[in-house]
Amino acid sequence: MLPLIDHFILHLATERGLSVNYQLLVRRTLESLANWLQEQRQVSEAQEVTTLLLTDYLARRKQDGLAASSARVELVAIKIFFRWLASRGKRAGDPSEPILPPRVEKHLPGTLHEENARQLLESIQGTSPLDRRDRAILEIFYASGLRLSELVHSRLENLNLDDGWIRVVGKGAKTRICPVGSAARDAIQAYLAHGRPLLVKTKSSSHVFLSIRGEELTPARIRQIVQERADKAGLDLHVHPHLLRHSFATHLLNHGADLRVIQEMLGHADISTTQIYTHVDQRRLKQVHRQYHPRA
Image 1: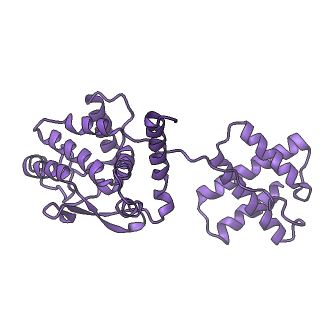
Image 2 (image 1 turned 120 degrees about the horizontal axis):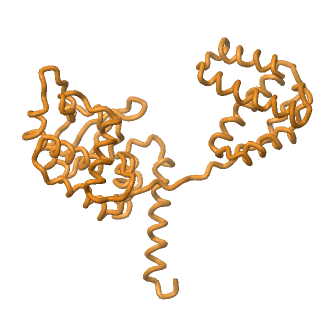
């Protein structure tokens, strides 16, 4: 099988123009399969590979601790290889065709309790430029559900505090308008009036949030700021920007917001992505039912 794998990788590179990283991933997957077939089943020819052999190999990978998401990626590599072999007449039929991908377990996103969110935000009461900046960062994450990259690249010209919105560029270079709540507006106005001017340097850009050197904050630094502020607030939790985004959506849903509206505010292209939050809400409803219903 190894010479056929070489030919297939060449096909991916020259005819399909796939990336080097993807070629390496496919090669690693197929060579691992070929080695297992040779060592464990004494099969070295592609024509001898059966559906049962492939399912045995995938079962072994699962027993070795391979995650379902990674198993799906490996199965795709195996399927496109055997489909290519069959289409080129290098073997009869595709033994991988009947194999279904493993189901990927959906994990509910973590969220902060509303009281914890309030504790985090209100823990920053200082008036130094960095205190004002960090309070504004946390407030807008929680008030507007921004992605980390959207906050990093936010600019003054895209911020309208009078009307309470900010324009951001999300995934796929799609622009959307996000509402900015009153608490976040107050924090940002205080930062822009009394904090940012003290951080600005000669070469500073129009990015809303600046470092102590007057430069654009990096994603890593913002993650660090969020966790540092959570630690100082006494939250024994791993707090990160995406957790605040999840909390934004979950708390909106808990208070009756329409799922389509939440989808729009989060910038999800597909409603199915937003529907994960309905599972979070259902979990809360079950807890309330067990706690208060007399026959729960």
